[in-house]
Amino acid sequence: AACVPAAPHRGVFVCSRGAVDVKGRSRVTVRSSKQDMTSVTSNSNSSPAGSEAETFVYYASFGSNILAERFNCYLKGGRVEGMIRDMPGSRNKTTPKEWHVWHNLPHRLFFAHSSPTWEGGGVGFVDFYENNDEEGDEVDHLSASRTNTKQQTTLGTSYRLYRITLEQFNDVLAQENGMVPGDGNCQALTSVEARSLARKWNEVVSAKNENGAKHGGMVTACVEGSITRENFVPSTGPRGETRAPSNRWYGYAKCIGTMHGECVLTFTCDPTEMEKFRSGQNATNAPSEAYYDVIKKGLVQTGMSEREAVAYLDERVGTSLIAEGSAPVR
View 1: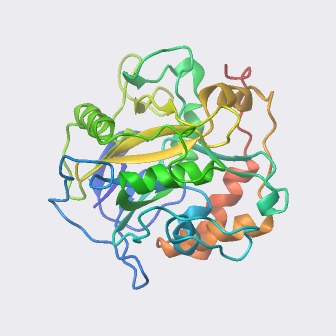
View 2: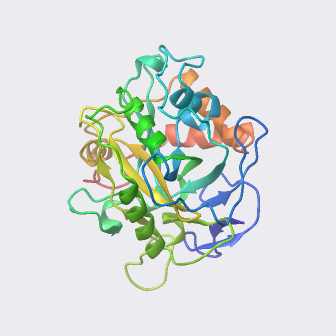
């Protein structure tokens, strides 16, 4: 089953079947692969209590790691074409045997900074529309005054979810921030924290579906009255936390949902930097051709056609991060 908005309003999510829809529909699909990773559907994948090496989570990739070969560099070590150096790899070099796809969740994908690895082009980040003024880790139902609702419902982010151990996720987080696995400057998520985040998402999304997925595209928080495209506001779920030094690009770790009861984690820039991108204080930057091509190939691996992958990327590269017709979002 794939989650799509119910007619006539975009934003109320129900389960139905169908092909990938690139624009404006949040979908959960499961794709199979005959390569190193195979997508498997299971109703009893819950992780046992224990250490980070024994706890399973899903890493939600949205940039170059959507391509399986590129992601494996962070697990097994080495490099693929386009990388300027070898990655050390994770302490556990086992590659995932399971992956899933979440298409077009209500987060905004954009490209920024200038990466020497990718010919000076921008690299991918996502805006979860969290409110940087709030404190704590409570579930955040967004204020319509500080979000671009149209972009949320039409320019969502597609993720490839790899099932890996929490230790592996922490090792990937360290490497993405220029550190080696186990570096004390990168605060590792614990198994207790991962289970707590999963419980919070399970409370936010009470509905069950046959794919076992729960995420912010499946719930709404209306301002008043009936849900329409104009007042549809998704939940961001429990707040993320900065785990790497603030000068690193990908130090903000965030749980964006659960899959079969297990925590789905990703990372992006911290909320302070995100506000600068939203306001235009920090400029965005289009990706290089090589980086663009890696993501395109990864999207095709997940089941998109090449045409769908190009349309998905072109629209997100070409659309301003600042809400159309409004003052900068702060």
